[in-house]
Length: 322
Image (cartoon, rainbow, N blue to C red; front, side, top):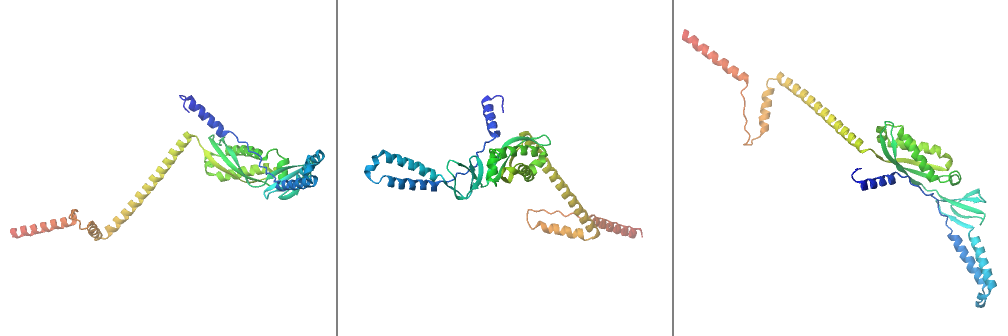
């Protein structure tokens, strides 16, 4: 952030506070459907109305109106006994404040004004681990976040043993994440995400054993490094690639030199090999008119010609002396 722009600094600070602020998950409770109870109430209310008001003149009778009101209240109480839970819903029933049973899925009955019902969604829940700052074992600050996959296995324990199981497991996962990151080097954090997730999962599972929850998995999503560290790692990676390139090039040069040395030794052992190689080179140039080929006379031929010239001169001198 720049000190010359206070407005931009304030905006960036607010953004950072929002980014690292912990989210407050709502309890994943299902809503028990009461459509059958509503239909039952309507049937009872309509049937009672027909029985109470048999004629039009009865509509103005205060006593019959009072009886109708009482019948509607009684019908509502009876209808509230009928509940329906979907396939993924479980209803925890408390009778006079004490745990009674777990109902669902399907149709079940409760006692009005005595039983209270709290419902729980038993499907797999995806819960974010908010992004937070953590210090690695080699004192490098990193920003890291993750995701938890969990499922309510025992609805009664999830409701009774913990006030808000989603908030509780989220906060414990955040603490476990910082502990695990603090025990590893930066290189391990960057390369061993899966093992870090498994280690956090084991810690959370051991702690939430009596919460009625099953942790299906914990995965690390993003790991954000400081900008200066990113630049250093980029230079290090570039230097490493350059080193490998130089090593590869030097190994290639060494192999080429060894092959040339072996080829030179082979040609030295075969007197005609050099002439054949020269002819192959000339043939490979092709008949293009723009190519100019200069053939150098070997030194051996020049020595042979010089020796023959000396021999001829020696014969001539012998004849003249004779």
